[in-house]
Each structure stands twice: as structure tokens, then as C-alpha cells.
Length: 350
View (tube, rainbow, N blue to C red):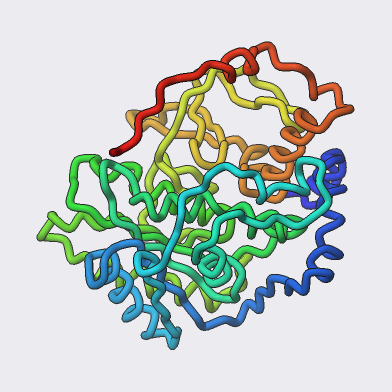
């Protein structure tokens, strides 16, 4: 990755860079400390989204045993014992990036910002452990992930350049692909805040697999990664031949856009090629003998969605579409005002 080239590309993202420049002063005025990454932490935070002493929590306890072999400290955060409300789309978390001049502040009163302080801001490593229902991680984990904006936009001037180490565990009883999306909500969250060390899907109905030992190994992998400079950390779990090289997701899409080197905000996907649903990295299928392989695009790897450039490109594109005075900010073809006036019968419980 050419860091100087990416810095030059970042300078073209005019609106978001101006907004980012205001953040240090606004944080100082509000008394909000900076995020510190010492590179020497020995603390691991296990974040459990399942019931007390359920498989999600027991998997974290197993990971703590493995981490303790390397002298790491382990703390447990039980999210179900706290109050986390779902996002109501009030937009109070994005004022600076829709033309305002103040720090974000979520309109909901609950424990979420305390959770974000522990999981995102504090100097530790994190392991998310989530139960799987209907293919997905549970709604509590999704709620937390979707309310990341206040913390992210408070530190948006360096949020994606001060990542920590992370790992994830999904727990369910399904086999044959019934947990295929279980880790994806955790993956989206961790892609914003962490370098991924390991992940495991604990299929508890498979009795011939020693899942306790596998979770212990996840703890060992995390501890070993914590002893290295973060720049040297690579994924230490099982390697999948089609896994995305950026986020390790196996959930892919097919897009039909024309190939080209994009300007900021333009689509960059190729017809018939595979696209990572999480980080936007695309690749090309080809055969090596009888084996199907993927050749991943290096430009996308260097500019993935949750890189500093990738997220700022996304935010800058939105800003130019909603802030008056820019050519991208124009009246929509869709007549939303017309349908807004429609009155539908609303049903409520008696």
C-alpha cells in the first residue's frame, strides 16, 4: 500500500476532510479524551450477547483459559444484562457530516455509549460472542453494531487508523450452512474498529468436535497477536480458499458494473466478478487445474470500505449529495412528497 498516494487521494475528499479538521477542537471543548493505543495492553474484553452461562458465555470462558497461558487478563461484559435500544434513525449522530457544527450525540438514553467506551475506545483487545438465530447473529448484537455512529464520528479524524485487535465467536446448533451469516454482524462491527485475529462458528450440536479446545485456541491466538506490533498481525484462524483477504468474510455478491479505476464515489465493480459483501473488495474467478480460485483486486484491498479512505469516500459522497450548493445535490426524480401525504390505517395492540 502506498500511504503517500492514499493521503493524496484523501485530500480530494473535500467536505469530509473539512469536517474532520473541526473534531480535535470540538473534542477538547467538550472534554473528550483521545483514543490511545499503547501497543502494550494485556487486557482482553469478552463481549457476550447470549444468556448467562450459555454457550456464548462458555465459549468466552474457554478463550480466557487460552489467553491466560500467555499472561493476558480477561474481563467479561454481559450485554443482555444492560439496556440497548434499537436505532430510531434520528440522525443526531451525524450533525457534522450533514452541514452542522457540533459533535454527534445519540438521542437514546440507555447503556450503549458505555458499551462503546469499553469495546471501542478503551485500550484492550475484544472478542465478540454472539448466539445465532435464523441464520443471523441475534438482534442485540445488530443493535450495538448499528449504533456505532456516535463513537465513530466523534473520532472520525483518526478512527480507522487506530484499530485494536479483535476476534469473534458465533454459537448455534445448526449445521449444513445454517450459521452462514452468524458472524457477519460482528464482522461489520470489528471491521470498523479492529484487525481480525481469529473467528469460529461453534456448532454445538456437533458432539465430536472439541469446541472448548477450539475456543481456547482462539484465546491463545489473540494473546500471541497481542505480543506483536499490530502492523505484523495477520489472521490466525482457519483459512478458507474464497475468504475475503481484507475481512475474511465468505459472503459474496455478483455485481454488473463496468471495470475502471474509479474517481472517489464511483462504482468500481466488474461484471460477473465476485464482491465481498462486507468490505467491498472484488476479485476474479479462475481455475488452477480443477481448483476454483479468486484473484483479489489490490486497489480494492488498499481502499476497502472500513479503511480510512474507504469510509471517508463513502461519507464525502453522501455529503455532496445532501448539502446544498454542490452539483450532486439536486432534486430527486422520485416524488417522495407525494407519497408522504398518503394516510394509511395504522394498527396497534389493544
